[in-house]
Image 1 (cartoon, helix red, strand yellow):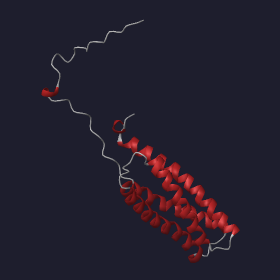
Image 2: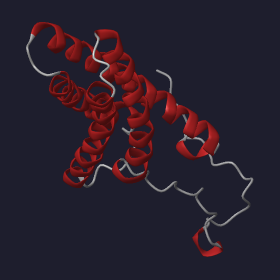
Image 3: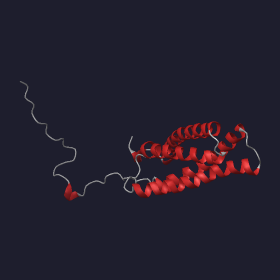
Image 4: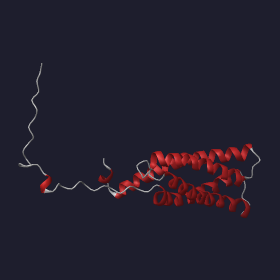
Length: 172
């Protein structure tokens, strides 16, 4: 199926599904790293979570660039990466801000409570990331229009329905 032949809803649904697949991998990485750091080190919870989020951001960039948005404009990689990191930083602040508020504002610091607020933070940050990445980072290439019919001067003489002669085949 060609890029322009499916409707905008199907294209968006496919993009959301691919974004979600990469996001699931990033979320697993994020939870694995943060829980390992929470249980195996003496790092404060939010600092450990910031490290986990950074590791997940790296994984997500690879997934988004080479899977979700592989058909998008690749002409300005430095700008793309700069914007990706800037918007990821905002997502990191959203995600870790929710965790920070839960731990230091509400005093909810058990392992279960950390993970619950981590899910909430990731959810809010994901909405922001989806909008910003598709709008500013991985810009869509313009959809090419159907080729126009050639002008009369560019056509070959003769009726359009006339088949071209076939070359003779020699069987040895």
